[in-house]
Image (cartoon, rainbow, N blue to C red; front, side, top):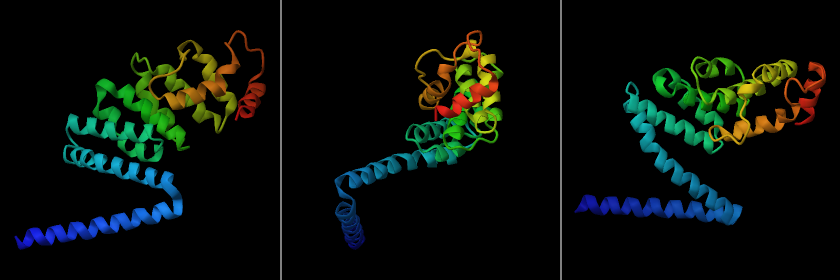
Length: 206
């Protein structure tokens, strides 16, 4: 009975501290800031058990799938840097959906401007027949654009037939940005600009 009373007392104190903190956020940032904070707390509470499961079953397929769920969720929430460590080893651990995991990994790297090794991360998509291969070329082109826009243009021309022609479902935020940047270049046989001209055009679209 005494233990229950002590526990209840601690809970009351903790609840009061949380409410005081929330009141402070409300006074300083307003309802919108408080709402975002509560949403993040809710997401954290749901994510913690999945992270614990993934860590406890790290050598099993189910653990890798839990890690994939964490990575995809982080990506969809725009937390690309958080997504990368969850996704990094998954193509090898989930060979049947290696292309799917690799696509999210490559997209997370591009979106977070962590461009080293993007081509290697996306390699599993080019070793199999995958519906995501076109998206992989778009992501590689975006990574290349940072160092050589002309090579990015060449890559897109070379694989033009594989590029998606409509809104993407998987990795959609990365792919749609690629389409907006490169979509106006036209088909290879219609493009009469030099690689240098095209490179300047890509930069102009930023």
